[in-house]
Image (tube, rainbow, N blue to C red; front, side):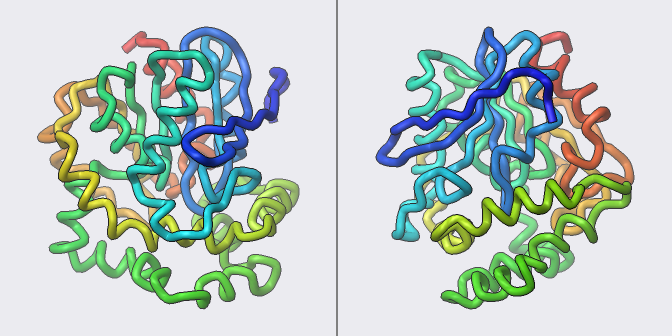
Length: 289
């Protein structure tokens, strides 16, 4: 963990209470985690980024110590994006660098589409542009098979029951069995994840992100899909959930794009290869390349 002082705070924004950690000072960087994580996903990035920036890593709605609304519609993409916009205002900033991984990447892409003038720079880790993701889910049999769990998550209650069994064994194995490097997730790390998953209502809220994705068509119909802000796409090539081919053609939808592949690194890219990710992310966030 970072030696830089990290504060835990709560913000009442967009009808929910969002827990976040904050460190450093300067222009704002917002870090958005994915499934099934929480702010701790960014533990290796906070201190390097906070040397020159105010860095905020939040528990997105439904996760860890943030609010867990009951309705599936409360996890629609529109709400997730507005959470980020409201938090930026709450922090007294007008602009931010947006960084997202996995489902946080979905929110990051969508935020840049909805609020390009608020987005200073955009960095996404192992999550393709939404147009390319939608295309793959309709025409790429390999990706359809890889994304089987998204369909399974539509079943009421069963996914939560399966995830909770064996001290959240299904979830912990999704971390430990996917990485190729040793000691990426320590027993202490996994225990912190178990504590986050054990928060009342957390498992259902996390799965509701998938259940609410059917509402995303409404969101994408209202925003341009071409992104003009400087964008960095970092991709671990050994991702078992999302194929590298999903990155091909991103330049058709992003006018100022940098793509960097980390060979042999899993979906949990910023945790498995923190030094390599930071060597790319920190100078990009600073506007140095």
